[in-house]
Image (cartoon, rainbow, N blue to C red; front, side, top):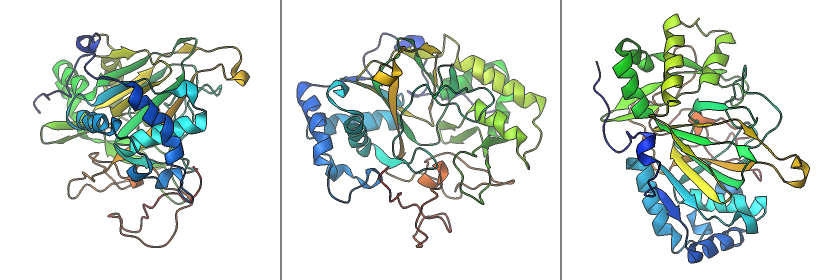
Length: 365
C-alpha cells in the first residue's frame, strides 16, 4: 500500500475559494508590456512555434512569470493571471500575447494534427459523449481530465452568457481520497490503461496510448486521466476488454474529482489567463449558455496554449512509446508525447526517441 501524498500540490478547493495568493493582478506597466509584445515578436521568418523569449520583451512581468513558473513546478501547480488587455487586442495579437507569456514558462506545442500552435475554444455544435474529445468544443459539460502536455494555458477573450464554470482539482488529493475509500482500487491507477489518440497520431502510428494513469516519482504524483479517451479506446483493435473494476475506478475518480470538498470553481472573465500543471491538476468545465449572435463575435471564446517545460524531466528509462505493450511514465512531456506532426522534416536530429524528429512545424500556425 502506497502512502498518501503530501505538500502544497495536495489542496482542497474550499480552502482556496477566498485565497488571493495564487492570483497575479497585472500592473499598468505590465499591461503596457503585453500590448507591445505582438509588435516586438513580428520578426521576418519567425513562426509561432519558433518564437523564443528574446522575441518578447517583458521587463517587469518577466520576474512575476518566474515566480509563476516556480508555483507551477513546486507549489499548488496553478496560477491565475488577471488583466491581460484582450479588449484592446484582436484574436491574432491576443494569441501573440499568450505565446509571449508561454515562452517564459516552457516550449509551445502544436494543438492538433494540423500543427497549429493555437486554436480557439468555443461551441462548434458537437458533443463530448461517445467521442475521444474532452475539450471545450461544445456547450455540454466537459468532465475532469488532463491534457497531453506539461503545462496548459487558457486565455479568456469572452466569457459565456452563463455557466462555463472552470473547475480544478488536485490530482494528489483525488488519489489520497481514493486510497482512503477504496485501497483495492487505487493500485489499478498504476496499471496499464489505454487512451484513444486517433486525433493526434500520424499514419502508421498506433491509434492508442498504453500507459498508467498514475506515476509516482519520489514524493510527487503525475496523473494522466481522460475518461472520454479511455472509453473511446475500447473500440480499437488490439485494446483488451476492460475489467469491471476499471469502470469502478473511473466512476470513483470522476465522483471524487467533482465533489465539492475537493474541487475549486473559477469563473473566468475576459482577460483572465489560467495556467496549470497537467501532471498535478485536472480541470473541467460546466455546461453553459452562449449569446445568440456568434457571427458578430458575441460568443464564448478562449485560446489554449500547450507547453512542454524547458527542462526535460524524464527519468532514465521512461521514454514514451506507443503500441500493445507500451508503457509511458508521465514526468516531463516532450513534444513527441503530445503529437507527431504530419509535416515534420525527415532530416535526422537528435531526439532521445530514435527516429523521431522534434523540430517545430514550419507552417504559420
